[in-house]
Length: 487
Image 1 (cartoon, rainbow, N blue to C red):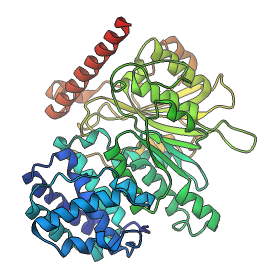
Image 2 (image 1 turned 90 degrees about the horizontal axis):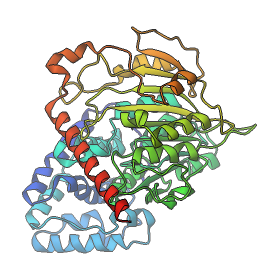
Image 3 (image 1 turned 135 degrees about the horizontal axis):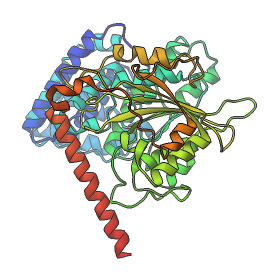
Image 4 (image 1 turned 180 degrees about the vertical axis):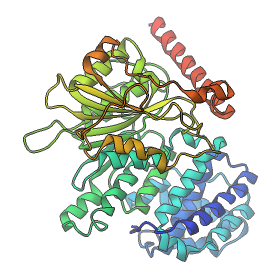
């Protein structure tokens, strides 16, 4: 439905995003929770953006944007509720996905009228020129920055996403997966990277263009409302590939295979409801979602042939995946047998809005055999002696420049690299050294000189989020253990 080009300047988009976020005051006044803000706005924005893009043909005339501007009072609210139900039953798959099970939390007609009026008065000409996709992603980011919304748990900082994409260098014609896609940040960034290098796909054949728009990307999201936002994001970036509603850690995930590239930030914590993932093809059973996702990802990569290289991946994972004993050690060993785990990036603290955990990016490529895939692992420490990132000190593209230079131009870690020694940020560790550490990849050698400030504690809100996350995870593990004991 949409054909959107990215902006050369973002000033107008920032202004519009700020105005849209201010409308959330109206939603709050009507009792709408933070977690529902963007979902509620998405319904209205879809209709307005369809009008702005002359893309209303699939929408029945009686449910288009203009029908909202022509009504007031109780009539407007009743019409809006009817509209949501009708579009949720649309024969158009994209519209049906956006409005599936849609309900409004608005109770006061005057609040709905205020939203419609203010959205109509935005500078839509400038928004079209700069890119409606940029505008929507800006709204998603604003929502993630608001700690009360809880959106930070699935929103990966764009600067981190872009750095991972630049390292992985996605190419036209590749199949790119995100098995826990959230609002689609990774796939949108990969799409943008490819379009920037193919003159918005115009350098490709028609067949290649159709593949890029309709088949190149596959995303899976477990939460229906989050998937709704992902589909909206995809449409605004002219991506029509499948965004599936499902659980990658169930047997549904077995269909996700032969990926040329996986980009992901799997959710933290244990399997919902306790117990292990229900996949029956996993070699190592675990209730740790990140370890389960890691197992899925390296198994889903394309095995190399004489004509095609092995699939590659860049995955955000918390520290516990690197050091957990028993099953964790077995999964890491299996990963390093089947893949070349060539690089680990130790990320700074405080970069995730709703999580206080320490995180890393693992970069690896599928080996031609199931053994002896990893010879050396290069670790870049971007955590020690770095600023305490948060709202006051945002993470920027500049912070990743030295890492990307050290990583090199080869997406699969094949560039010539230099071990910088104990005083440097980039070091090489042999497979034997790691095996001698009981497969522990949580490797730290730099003394954090900044830890003397504030006793090394992160910002209070980050510390509180970390404590809460650990308590919730522990509670789930205890419940899972209780269920096993009852059996």
